[in-house]
Image (cartoon, rainbow, N blue to C red):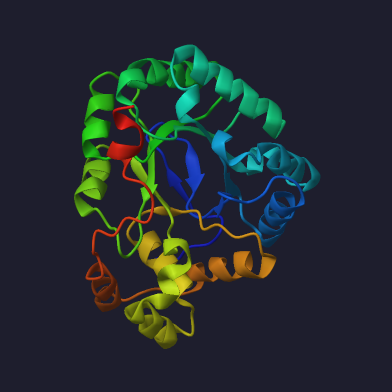
Length: 278
């Protein structure tokens, strides 16, 4: 499986999305996020992931405009936060994000966390945003299978992406299988286990065999699993290093060794307890 920073996956509505992107969670507004996005674009990244919650959309917009890279060549993702959900709230939140980003559309707009009581009106707003052209694709974050089933029951347009916590210690194979069966592309957040990949002996051993880093091995494993990855960094050298995951391939035996690391260990919040019943 040969991959590059230009490799893409086709979403269910025909939109092409890069397989590898830059995450910006906790990248501070201002110089920090601007410089990291500029570095990523210079290296060759063409996908940037942000959210209303992150508070850094304005800096990302400035970086995009100052990069010299055409807007049409960058796949830009943002998300509607929990307190912004509902029909009118979601549409207003998207407009605020577009203003901060300095663009008239995003390529992908996501519901950040599942909330039962606002699920239907929020998704109707997402579908409206898609029809209006303010986003080219719509999807969700942190949706488990029963959240997706509830959404599919009230949707006209099915979600195209589910971005959720996915790494060697939290693999959720049944959720991945459900997404695959319903043509929902999986995007992994925390693909580097929030820096803890270096503590995993198996990843270190496989990395040594490839002259790679444990981070690169984790990213490569996810890519070969068919997921999109968005590792976060604010350091140019690490942004470049992460992209080294595209330069080698894991064997079936190595993939199986990493598969065996699954412990159901969640580093982030449980979607059911964070927001679903709020």
